[in-house]
Image (cartoon, rainbow, N blue to C red; front, side, top):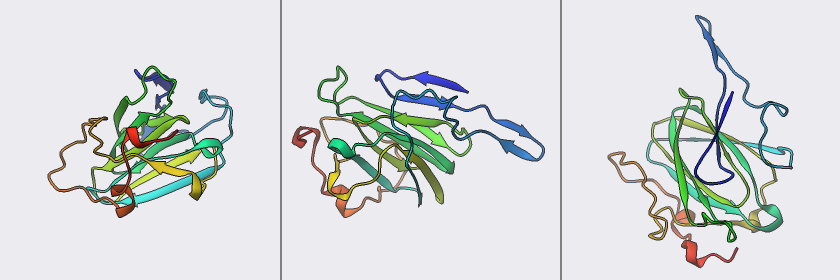
Length: 179
């Protein structure tokens, strides 16, 4: 397994060792002693979402004591995954990092607490899965609009309009946040 740092402190890309032969493949999704993630909380919740091409989810996060770190991956299909640094004290506050995650490349993306997260689905029947180091708490949810002009995220052109929930369209900008 390779763990790669990004230009934003705390965000990690994990490339697992995949063992493939004529029967298929095998790899470890997570191993507590091999995955040296910079967090001190155990994973307590696993989530999965299935979406079609064009669905954009996010940019979501939870606040305060309910903040979550997430280890994300794609089981089948592909997404363009984005994390935005919302740590007020960080030198990279407001900066974002994007990565292609797919069932084919099997990369994982560690997004620690203090980041907003979202993804654009690039293929029909994509299954997105992630581990959380804190439980979901409805009253702690928050987010930033995917097209916030302050962030200028370069979402891929998929040749059709994005499909976005009413809830996500109602999110504010980075400057609207009280973190």
